[in-house]
Length: 481
Image (cartoon, rainbow, N blue to C red; front, top):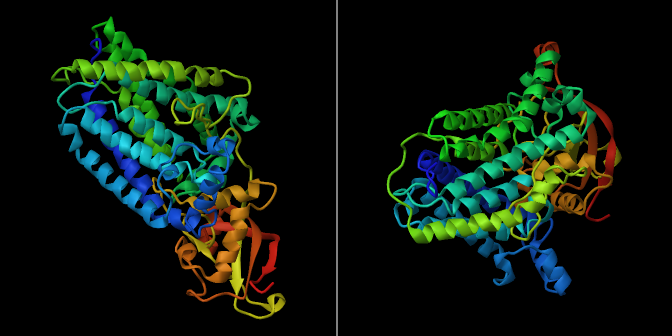
């Protein structure tokens, strides 16, 4: 650190700018492929209806966060155009082209994709109600002020990234300590690898590890989330201590954050949450003498103003970290800045899956039923869970949440109607349609309990999962009925 210039953090700035831009590219691509079927003009939860409601009164208007579609009327084509532009601008930032100009050029590019993606999230309703949406938005806003390649990044902005990682990791740690007993008695990860929303190819192997290993996982998680985040701020001591020790401590803290997140990448599918944390963790890796150029005065003014804004906005999330009733994944302002983060305060002990089935037979009581296959969520017991992260399968994630609620959500009932209609965009969200585009006469939903097969069961049957039938959750439905 050297006053206003973080002279040792130009490498960190490169990773942050390009890594965050890469995550935006994935987010825009995910929206391009899924938004119209889920939330478009004929989607499961049509965004135009939400926007129309928002225009009905001032109170309704305040309930919808800022979005471009307040001023530009929504259409599926305009949504696709926004996603394509977002992908192109993100690609330029990944290549480092805007960073070759003065600092206001990458600033405008990052602010463009930040507001463009916020325009999507603001009307995304439950399909965009994930903590990593807020995380990506906040990271994109801060990345706008990292500057150009010919100058060191501003100290204030680098410190704001440390503050973001601290809220992300320490907030998650506090949620766990205050949450389910399983985090305190060290049994949480005995269940988590099996019951997490979308397991990956190695999740079963992780689940079958010894209990003592799972307890070590929990202890390591508590250390990484409750102790290590405090060390991220040690490099600021470099303003007064010329020794390299503060940089080494910060780099060690970053390495621990990255290592724990890589383990989560290997054992699960959490969209871009883990990858975003890895990218943000690099903000604490300083390389001595890794700087050239000077920061223009106007840029010092701009970045200092952003830091002052964050000081004001950070009071609410700071109080929340130490509040008895800590909020998880909460925003305290309309712009998704200085948010509260956290995940998995409790761990589910068993895995319940809702399986959608259809039939061409006229008599549902004597029918032969065929399953619809999802891209990511468990279904076929012989199928090894695929790796999808950082790509986000929104329908599959919402299917995991359904058994945790007290009733079937409205979007799911519309989803069943779309299956009866053999709706093309909806079917393209799935891995397979057992009827090859033809309309089934009936659909129903069956609830199953899933668990990973033991090594012996896997060897004997070839199955990855073992399931037992629980009950018919939704009785046969038809369009005529």
